[in-house]
Image 1: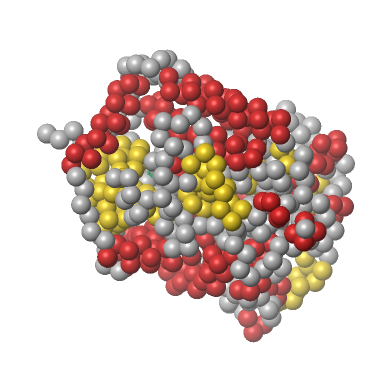
Image 2: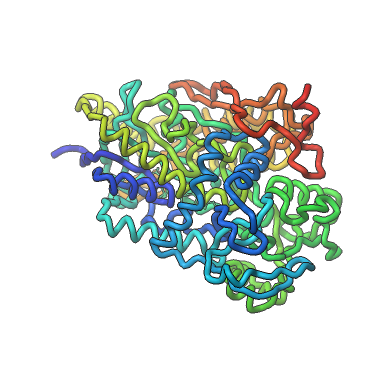
Length: 607
Ligand SMILES: Cc1cc2nc3c(=O)[nH]c(=O)nc-3n(C[C@H](O)[C@H](O)[C@H](O)COP(=O)(O)OP(=O)(O)OC[C@H]3O[C@@H](n4cnc5c(N)ncnc54)[C@H](O)[C@@H]3O)c2cc1C
């Protein structure tokens, strides 16, 4: 009997969130045989936790009038602090309206325009009677127009459930509770993966003409994150560990302004988009003092910094979980809260024991999104290995640069699923697959050795949970919203030691079957490598851009840093190797983002 089960397909998609499933639908529709792998049943992927909405320039609502892909493009580039690939942002903005309408066709119950007058932030808004019933949009941070299409505040839920229904309708094979442990490649071409069944613990081999990584973000490297507990970045580190595939801009980590205290579950930007305020300990609405134009709806990086700056000045509300500020949505009224914001109302009631109809919500900036990921070209092909693609949050495509706009990520997953999915299909139809059994055996043996080594404590008895906690603390304390040389150097030094210690993990448990300690032990070195790439990239980048804010280099420095970080991890190395590639400016030259803080500097651009 073979030591492992083998499966083969035209296309292998790792990840059953929105990105993976939309790409799978594209490839299957073009007649290809597709297998999707996932840690959890598809509908439990983090995409279903998305709340606020998806950006597309439909221009149906009164406050979105005149919107078009040019304005969406410009908002995305400015939001990225000129760190994004403008060709990708252009393609994205052009395709997003098609994606939203196609999702309506597949069954999304988008909120629609309801004619009539209503008050918003002290102003009267009147919706156009002629637009009645068309897909509407809400206000989101960093956008010139109201453009975020939504289904109440459960947009990710409706999108993923609908997409998964299409996957089921097409009869696409899904192997859930399956974890990819490594890629299989011959030095130039990716040939598939070695995976582990999380139910039985047995190993499996999947070979395919194209392998697609759509494994989402790595939020759980940080102790306080809005991300699902499965968001540990494993797709990114299996690519990194080939030594051939670089990760782009890993230092670009997004902190969302409003994680609820103390569970850090997200309170959507839609709460501020619909008119919510941020208040300090004196119940003073402080954002207009800092950002008189966009107030609570400046870009996410800006609002997060302003909150922390205000807390540092002593205006935070003390709590056993550290200081926080308040989010006030009481004035939106019970009906609005219990319909359009019902998810966050339930989260507040269930996890913090407060009712936002009557009470203030305690919030603090919390790790939320990874702009960095597997670096790909505009077709979604990973750098470094033929036959490997990446999309969604796991990728650095790169339409977000150094700050992703709220609502642009759900849109990215579906738009990239359409565009990259089509490129995958085209590539696969031309490709052939020849995999040597000896090569596959070698890759399986490496994983068997790792597992046996851990079970028998061959290399030592370091405690995986202790290492993990330490990694979370290092990142939270030194690589957060405000960064500077000394703490970043501390993080790099400590992660270096932690990386070495992670080679000596042993198990307390038996390691058989669905053993969570073994699963964590198999991931820990890869997670520390991602953390190391984040810290090393942040230390090297001596400027501030988007979410990467250096207190010792508070200005954006286009003369020296209009470039993307590429982090490699050569096989056997003890630290990442950083390289850079220029960020091409094809349409919109660097300028001022229009915020009060000294971030953008057209002045530096001119030097
Ligand atoms: C709370 C929250 C709210 C959000 N709200 C919004 C919003 O309103 N608007 C917006 O635009 N964006 C929002 N985002 C961001 C957005 O939801 C995500 O970026 C996006 O859904 C990611 O989709 P994905 O398909 O790339 O990955 P995910 O949905 O995270 O799916 C990843 C998949 O990969 C699988 N996987 C991972 N590792 C492995 C492995 N080793 N082997 C096999 N399978 C693996 C998982 O099982 C899962 O199926 C939100 C994010 C969060 C956390």
